[in-house]
Length: 495
Image (cartoon, rainbow, N blue to C red):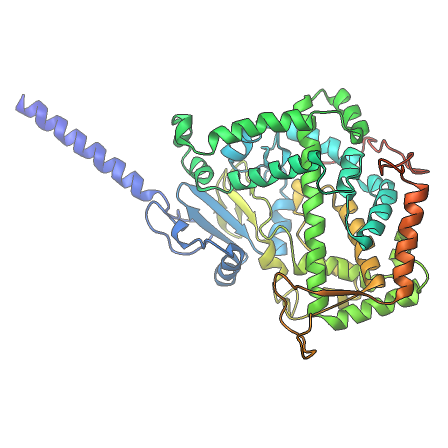
């Protein structure tokens, strides 16, 4: 018996030692992986991740470790791409294996019921929806929706923009207090809070925690209920879905999936365009010489008596540069949305393991002094006469690239060209007439360049209200002339 007990004790000790060794290997960087900051057992690099301004740290590591480096966050491996060449080589050229998404259990499985395309794994369902969205939001759609963009950009000059709900759902939202709009945006905000919470991150880092009782996960119940509420809201039959419903009939996907597609388009389009325009205004305050040069071009090409239109775009090269530069200078997605590689790969002599999360380090690429000599102190890209070299990575890369980018760039061109045509942007002044550093309550002074332009803005909108919009509902009286609602024409696309 003593011998048996001794053997059992030795076996138990051996098992515990083995378990301890395996535990201490968690967080280590295996040989052959891309370099990165030193790790500690179990945590890896997690203790080095800052609570705020993470993009600055990721850029600093890129400067130390090069265009491709790795972060070990407990049980997960993150590969960070910090050069345009690395992004093209992997996310674009090898998109067949770099187009999936990492595990986002709370965000995708619980809070979205597996229906949110942004977090969906690469596979047959994603390919079907991706192809359908491409056929609706391709370059033909970008041209088709110009009447909507023209109208809402005129209203933007007076105050509020309802462009995204117009294109996605087919109805205008003249007031931000519209109950349907409020419900959508409250849902978007809460979803963002849930997926960014510590509990959601733990469920991804340690999948075994997903099997704990639901009441132990504080956000779990809300996430489940959120899915039910969003399905009810988004599965209604909005009039945008002329194309979507046509595609749904052909592809046989569910009402819930259709609802999430429309909701995702609203979420993406409403936030990003407004954020870029805020960055543009900040840039105009910071770089008055760029503002002056853009206005001189507009005055020369357009003149004082009318608003710029899309027909002016080919002759407004500097303004086009300002659009591109606004996307680079103040990107809305500073780290993009993580990709995931579906099988082992290698690049630059380094091993990239299957299921590693691939981070597109947008901020570091946009602030790369090799691409832009003075990335934060000058409005660099707008001065480059070669428009093709004013690239940015804010729309992503590979098969996951934003499919609404053509529409977004047209919206931005109309808004930026018309804002520059109409207004001057400057720092606020103190009591002595000296410029002061803007604060959150007094960010920037926006003054119409002259009363003639102010009158043109008022007249243009009054004419739109009279000829295009119903007096009571403020919705379009009829479909704009020459506008084809169905742009869902099959087009060959690699998915």
